[in-house]
Amino acid sequence: MRCVGIANGYVMAQHFLLSKAAKTLSLIDVMKATDAETEKLFSALRWPETNGEAACVHCGSVSVYDCRRPNGAPRFRCKDCGKDFSITSGTLFASHKLSLRTYLLAILLFCNEVKG
Image 1 (cartoon, one colour):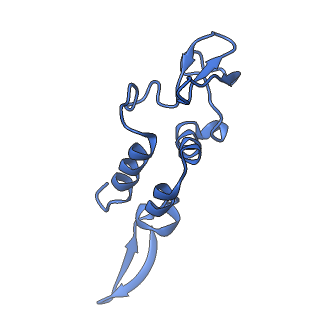
Image 2 (cartoon, one colour):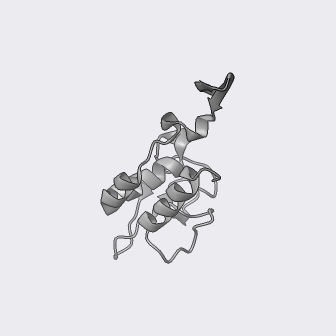
């Protein structure tokens, strides 16, 4: 915890998760993001170990390639096991019906709330 001031003789500390350094995404950034930027943000949150590069959810391989659906929906195919997966495969958001932007906004609001 970080000291933020003294009140009535007591040192008041601020929890790191409430500090500005912990909040890397803003509501405005997500609202203004294009679909491609939203995919990139979601990928960075989904696969932080590989700096947002997709990793197979079935075998863990990082040897994957992009094979988008005809409607433009992001999909990946693993070169090692040959299985298809998406950014949301294996997560709470698998088989989603809403846009990735909607889910990012929900995550952002939940995490940035005081009791989130």
